[in-house]
Figure 1 (cartoon, rainbow, N blue to C red):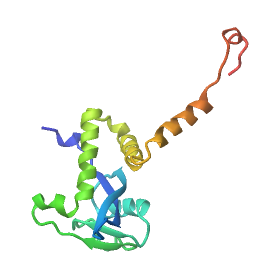
Figure 2 (cartoon, rainbow, N blue to C red):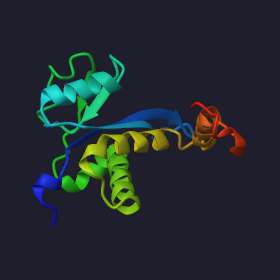
Figure 3 (spheres, one colour):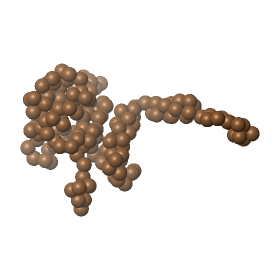
Length: 164
């Protein structure tokens, strides 16, 4: 069992993209994600997160938590999807549940825990990878350009006189 002082509060958002499949049925798929640490699940923290990560006027679906108040989401179209039983939550808000499940698996499986001072960096890293999952070359291209510009080549004979 994990002690409560080891737990963190993470808020997340998933962009939901609508499309029509081959037979014309309207479907939805997950687009980009964004996760952030927040100190408390109150309207100030949640409202700041939504303001920073969602375009004004966008539809925001929530499960009815009181922190998602009318004041916190004043610039958005707020649609509340009351879940009822917890077992139904993954059916009503399945994109965000899948995103949190994948994040949890990635953090606990790949990294086997994260130091508190690095938690937001890990969340940002997950966002970056998830949001570029359809373009696998983008990460390697960025790495190539970073490394290309950062290297300084010196011959061994030049080390004595080099000023870096």
